[in-house]
Amino acid sequence: METKVNIISDSEHEVEVNLSYEEIKPEIEEAYKKESKTIAVPGFRKGKVPMHMIKKMYGEAIEYQASEKIAQKKFWDVVDEKELKPISTPALTDIDFVKNEKLFFKVKYEIKPELELKDYKGIEIEKPIFKVKDEDVQKEIDYLLKQNATFEPADAVENNNCRITVNLQRLDKENNPISGSSSENIVIDLSESNVNPQIAQSAKDKKVGETFNFVFTDEHFHGEEKHVEEFNYSADITKIEKIVLPEPTEELVKKLSKDKASSLDELKAELKKNFESYYEGQTENIFSNSLINKVVENNDFTAPPGYVENLKNRLIEMEKENAKRYKQPFDERAVADQLKERAEWTAKWQIILENLAKKENISVDDSELEVLAKEEAEKTGISVDKLVKYYKDSNRTEALLEDKVVKFLKENAKIIEIDPETKLKESKEKETAAKGTKGKKK
Image (cartoon, rainbow, N blue to C red; front, top):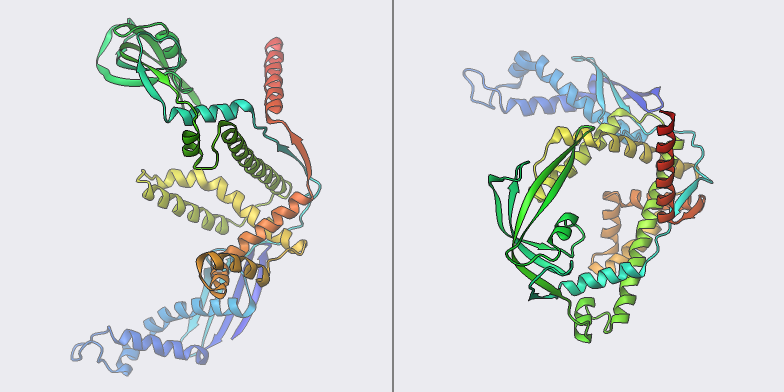
């Protein structure tokens, strides 16, 4: 077998293969045996037609059909032999089969291109430092206590610490009831932050049997066009209850904290620790994503289209499985459009990642997989050898490599710690100032 690899571009190669008829004869004979089991000729039972008759009558068609399958198999043999690394579905671009003489074919395939990486060290990246506030902790305590709250009948809505039951009636622009647009026994917790502020304001000081009106504003987009609709309602109060939070006794605190705390102060400390852990994770995620995005931006290129398509199809399948699991509608065309940019970005990052690892001599060896396997073996009871094999078969090596590359980038980045609230405030001030300047120019 004569083989040759042609370099078409940085990301596209082509394999040429020349085979003599003798080299593929075993596969040709196997094709005849397989086809002979299904061929029927008058005077012979199916599968009992003499081979010389089959070759005479159908030989050309059988051999040409077999040649395409042989080409596909031989291509993958070349891939293994030359350690080629196709990243998308290879395409058979040319085939020339001459019976009793030769088989020649070409297969085009994509590879991860080698990049001249730049500007991936010393990148200035903002890292948000979230601070745990006492009010955040108190809100969480109030939320936990509220899950165990009791409700006492009340004569009037004295404040937002109430729960009201109402009958709702939608009104037209002249405040007349709209037929068929009423709902009964709707429970509204006025202490919830997501309750329409108009409801809480209008219900203030109202008693059972009294009515108040409010407006619900619906804002939504059709493409880039914003639509605003207002709906008028009247609400008849049928029940008012005061929300009574329980005392944070030792027994209740233990229940709320799952035995991690026994006093209110201990519960606050536990919640603060949980917040800090959560914020730390969010900070690292934001920082890592910002850093990776900047590296991709600094080394932008056109990713191989076949590779992008493969990644997009994998993402679509994942979304399809999620929709199936949660019994949600699935519009494949819409999802494909939504995932296009994500697939392109992922393709670029994966190629940059591999190039960066190679340039900086970052790798994952078997000893690192064994360390991980030993830790999991103790928990699962699965042998280390089986776990190591599983890691190699399930792309765990690639995930570990990515972790090491991201760690390298972090160690070589210039971190600028910022207060997110101050940053947001400054951003809003700039936006307001810009709008003011624009208005003056007009």
